[in-house]
Length: 313
Image (tube, rainbow, N blue to C red; front, side, top):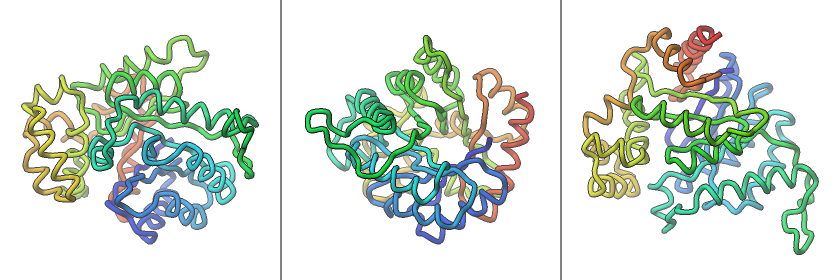
């Protein structure tokens, strides 16, 4: 059940559809598109992707409860379900610190806000209202939608374990993988059915563009937990400098501030499936995902992830 995370920066309709169709043709189970307020709107892109694909599951990866009101997210999901019946998921996270910083948001209550959104979506899908006091509901039906969650800090990882149908470990440093997976498991304790754990490691395939690898690594390093990034020499002052450059849209300047130790921890240099599968088994991973950089190369990366999954059985 390999997934694809669209990692084309600010994709236009042609790029979003092209990657989705290539992923679908290569057998991917799902594709997610980023929700960033300075890029093209994710829901409009997803609507076009829905109209140009037939089988692949699709959704935001990730939206957040700060930049989108939960009522709007419910309406958007219900509309997307009309366009792609039975193949819509909703990816939810706290929102990258560089995104929310530009909007003046602290994210200190991220876990609670995400829980509020997930609860609302499930209640509305079960026939509930948007607002209990007024009794106002959606005028369009919302079916139950799989919830995919991602996070890096303890509170978000624990919330993901407690709430999500699927939890995505996306570009987590190798040194922080076991801690992250264990917190997800702790959050899921007591649930009759724990969430599916999906891993998307950042692997340096020969045909993966260096700029794209760096793009992911910079964002990941910025949002990594403090204990890990401090071990790299990435202190708060440098984090703020990186964030400032990203908000300005200057990725090269941001990348120049990332210590080499961070890249060594974030990027798997050996793409051989067996060592990756060994790590995945130890984490309790049940499926894999890959970043999608280019329709021309995504099929090979999907095949690689499928070969890793085959070793998990």
